Picture (cartoon, rainbow, N blue to C red):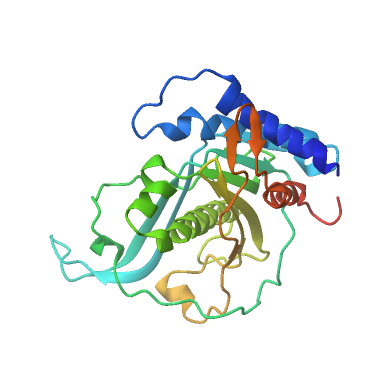
Length: 294
């Protein structure tokens, strides 16, 4: 790979959105739609097109812009407190409604990272109900969706790209002296998004809590604010998460990730200063990931 050409493509995309265009001031809390979003779209589409000659899987892929990804599952149980069903035991219901900025879907699965039954550590047990969090409650429509319909040949996930919301940007955490929570935000985004996406893919293939997966489902995610990039890879080994099925289930779902690192320092006078080749190379490695037989 010609690193100079890759760097030139990335810098051109960045300068196009942050220097050459005369953009108006963004609306409040819409900064990500102003520059980081268009930059990420242009960067990913340009790199994917450039690398498709080296990765046949990319040439056959589908690139979705702001798709919906949904997953619904049961885990744990609770006693109904109010209403005519008071006192009955119900499963705790979870729903993830996700909207990545971009995602790449492919017709063949990415290779497993570790064997299906690998034991890489203990999963902590959280006894607190999600309803105890100080958040507004609302009724969700329970659904499972990977970003495309069942008949789509590109039914496996390759890589998702997520933008950190403007209300949760790095400067706000620094001003509030919560620097230790910055990486927590990236990790939470990566883990939750990739679990929802890989689990939904598995359900599209006919697996569910009572008929667990027979092969692992692997997908990748890049979480960024347009400058800092964190990389995550997730391997789904089980969907058996209900009270009945989890008892004798030794399998664990696994996520690997990096801390966020800046792609560049600053854009000044029509040039990008402090460009980080390591971050770009990690992004290229993600895009070049493919099954061994290709």
